[in-house]
Length: 248
Image (cartoon, rainbow, N blue to C red; front, side, top):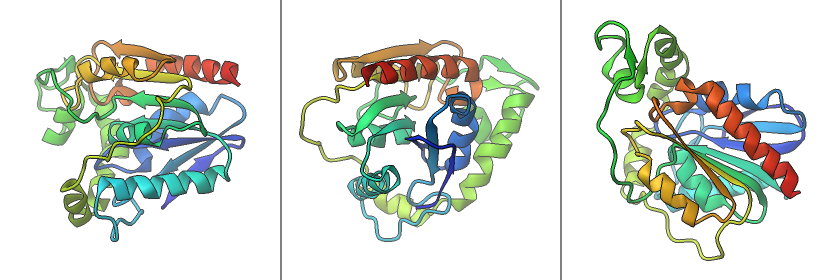
């Protein structure tokens, strides 16, 4: 797996969503983490995206196996923090174990997601004609700043997706149930109220799965929440890191 990293200390593994690569999560999460001492932030390309191969993978379970092995390698057998956005949040839930010192799920993809709101726009420049259809379907805050972020951190990775591998894995996209007790570490769940990709209702129900979880449903933002609400994201992640530190 290809990855980039910054800093030194306890590993923080940050997983991006589908159809992009590490550049999106790096751009969104690094501003929240770089000022916190003692964190080694690791941003991989998920298999079949960016510069990570998925040629031998047949299912989501195979992808999960690669991610678990990668986490073991970069954490050198120790504990680590785990962050996932979108599909990265789907895999992060399955990776959570006693070795994971804290779990952060941002707009997580969930099997059986429902009550997804209709697409809407909070702010737009150019009467809805700003950018291309992919931009307008992803961002609910549509202005020049968000278009610049899309063009710099999202759009360039589309051409690096292994479409054949994605289609093959997509035939078996649902992860097998993982036995064991619920994850008991500090969790934060962050959802966009206008998220027309995965919604927020299923994210609310995650509170029943995690005994030490905080939940924030952020208004006026969608699936691109890490781009659209960076200050809110930073505050919520700082609160999560405080609970991680307190838990030992």
